Image (cartoon, rainbow, N blue to C red; front, side):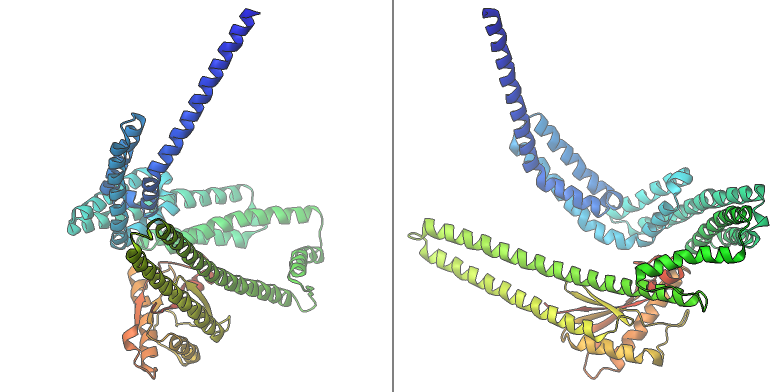
Length: 510
């Protein structure tokens, strides 16, 4: 009996020690989370700004101080030592974020080339050239950190060449090799007996891709698109051969084939809410489906814009309410504790509170007015002419119905009515700044696209100023961005059409 009691006593002691250890570890983890919270956020902000790529020295100093703080915490050096290292880490991370903003504009072309190379899989298919490009780009960023813009530009230019070379190698070894393999498979299985046209199209696209890759190394968008189309058509030919062979095996008549391929359109039309009828061919069902999809896209864009506007408004109001609640609670607490000795000081603080409240009330009033003005602008345009949405306090008018002739920047009479509506929208926001932004698709050289987008934005700005009945020249400016910031897929004709656009941004004076 005594032996059992001694065993139970030991078990109880071990259990208590285990619970104490778990409690201590949990407390330590909570303490670390509190101490490191600001530094953790600063590190995330730096990574989001690509500081590890664009400002490596400053970012790495932040990492070193952060690791030092972790070591101090593990060694129980004391809060002061830990906080000292964390403050240094936060300072380095914040400086890296600030420097990243300017570095992104300096290295815009290099980052585009790097992104294109990654998209082509160069970090896998052209590993050696990719590594060399990364090393040279790292030199460029370090030289810019040191303030040597000349050497930085030299290395950045060299990095662009290497990234483009890696992208070219990757396209050749990845997309083209896979396409050649598919064509070999098609040849082995005699696909040309049933799908000769599609197979020939794939072969022609492959040849065109190879020519483009050899003659134009500075614009990979077009050859990349050709390569993907070639690969698709090769796969398409193989699948067509399989399908036609099955039809032959089943002795299907042409009427059976057509009826079978009408079925998907019938099912899609049912979902779109109408009956597909083919007495006049396939055109009517096709147009009905396209119209339904277009209407859904326009409604979706409008709903997204409205949701963004509402979310911004709700967030601003919640922030305002929280600020007022916190300020009010602080003032009441201080007033209760110090009313006898610091009545004059408290009156001053209450006055500051009322002033701040009045300022925030005015801001809410301005936001309400801005919402009303946005609604007025939104109602000016038809869905087919423009999308109107908010980006923060900015009003963005994305002109769908505005088009330039290929390679041209002249305003034509067909656009006068739409530009008049833009002028009416601008008048709703007196004393605002207005920026006319021009964009192109990705086909063509970067430099020529940038120049064309600038000419187009200048043309729109000059027209707005020339036809305005007020002195608005000082507040309307223009900028061309070329092919950057696409809003749709550049690999489709519809996507490229959407990317060739004019954005008018109204920046109200808040």
